[in-house]
Amino acid sequence: MLNSLLMSKLDIALTVLVIVVAVLCVVGISCIVALICIGWWVNTEKQYKNLQYRVEDAWGTIERRLQKRAELVNVYVDCIRKVKGEDDEALRELMAASKFAVEEGSQAHVITSNARLTLLLREFMASVPVRYPEATANETYLGAYYQLTGVEDDLDKSRRYYNSTVRAFNSKLVKFPSKIVAKRMEEHYEKEPYFYLDEAEGKRRAEKR
Image (cartoon, rainbow, N blue to C red; front, side, top):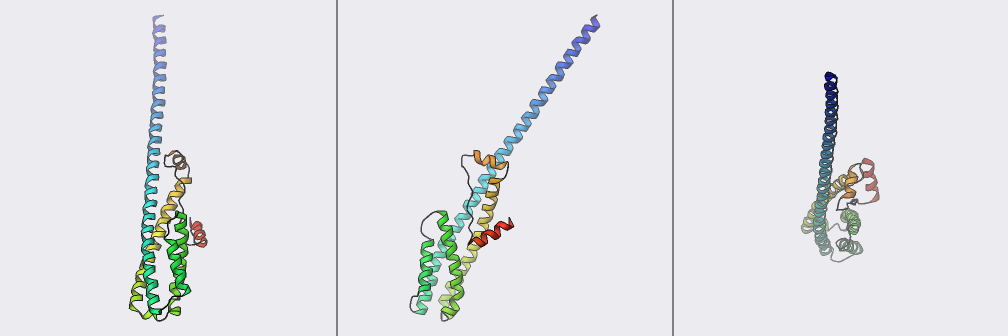
């Protein structure tokens, strides 16, 4: 009788022990999962902030180079005017586009107006040997031409880098589950605009993504 009572108490103790261990395991696993989730959430927030910083930094570089280009366009056009001795419609159109491109406005305005200026400037510079052949032998013009060409190359590189940072940022905004974090953050992130010169370039880049 005594042995049966002891065995019964032992069984109860073992059962209680098993339940306690099971509860502790569940709590422990839950804590580990919670810590992993919190760590992932914090890391994802940090990634968003880093990506946003890269986008803003890349855009800042573009703005500085756009301003430098506008200054050089003025110098470039003045050189042609001095060599030619007069103004013409092509020069006035280029100057008007350059002035419009540096006017204060939204980011969309900056992108659209400067994309138009880039295409117009490329076309104009390619036509100079035919339109103003005397300018191509002028040292002052050549100096302005090489400076402007250098800025255009730098601007093109900056634009491609900016688009790559925007691509990384925008992709993360739509991917699950990281997009859940973006919707809960105080910054209220939205997709950033690409800086393409025209629709054709945008389509080509989209096909590569």
